[in-house]
Length: 314
Length: 295
Image (cartoon, rainbow over all chains, first blue to last red):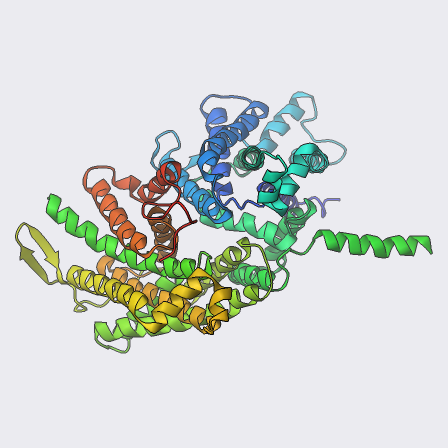
């Protein structure tokens, strides 16, 4: 048990889950066929809002994190109105530019502490640990140390958030809104001709993606103890994009698998870690050339369902 | 003060224009944004630096060398990352992602080869000489930058509008299918365009490396983002737009620094984009009837 629950594995599991949430955020906007390269920007708005609220205003975490998400989503609506009237490429560049502007503003503001970033953010694990010790479990539960318990609880919180997101998205896909998203992705002009208010639905997807990215940002601020403007630069956006590119963006499971693989791979290939980004780059080119729909697409799922179904019948 | 800043802004802006022209050419012909253009620019700077420092060639020879090397790099990129996507019908976001892949690859390759520290051109490569022109002090580097970039821009304009190959490029930009029907070898034209755009990026790399006297692997990203800003500012695929947009951005940046808000310098470009998208989404010089308005 101790081998399985060491600090290192728990830390990796936490990052896998956080990245998976970020993967869902880009999936959300991609589900209308829009590519947003501003997710790192929205993430930083969420992270900073949340960190400032907890560090400077002393707000509890369960309030600060959703407020961070809402702030990011609010910004996305302001920026989305002009940008979404445009074609996919315009949106990609405009959101990329938005991310840069946010970064420069954070670098210059006093409340965000400029290039130094905000440190000493109360971590989620410590908060949960405090709750436990106040309940009288200061020695941990059932043979686990207090540290392990609180880390495990963080993991549970993240798993629950991800599970909720997946549940929400699968429900959404079967609803009126999800069908509108799919129609816009398939053919925007045709969708508009069918009477779908494309601007409204694109903005909705955009805002939902920003909301999720903002919440992920708030979570990440309280997982890593420190945030700085460099954490949310262009590289972060590209990293999030790779999750969706590798895993596939047809189904929600795609970006999650992508996040899992791309977070685990560098850990497994420690020796090749300095080539990590080069491999990412080559991977993106190769994926676009050979399998632009990503590892997991609707056909893949249908194929395996068919195969497994037949085996069950026999 | 004002005239001095204006000259500085024009010099900076003319390098932005050169970079933006590379984006514009590829945007016009292939209808994609080449996200790796900034990294090609960075490679050009390194090739120039290498030629001057180790082979001790003349700076103008180094510029030509950088152009050739970057043209080859561009051709390689077209064959590996863009051509396979053209053969099959994929969404228009695929080339964008593919070129982002190329850009990450190139940036990290450069980090591996050249190391993260910034390097400078050896002294004597044009630096140091200053002249007094009325109220304005101008360095030799600035004059070279202005002459070369404006020269290249006018040659390019003339070449596109008057020569046979230029006509073929414009036809391909209008419609690849029609150009094919008219007997134009569009694959060749596309290769030529990408090579040309990359060569422009390469020489801009050397010029910028000379003027700020620092060459580093991360210089591609910031320059690439500026070039993209100019692309939207001037209107996608519009050559006049790229030229004037670059100058406008350069002047705006220099004046932002001169009159106070120096730390917001990098936000100017994207602040302008966001403003443009609100007011005039087709760009300053784009026509509203067609998306972008080409050449």
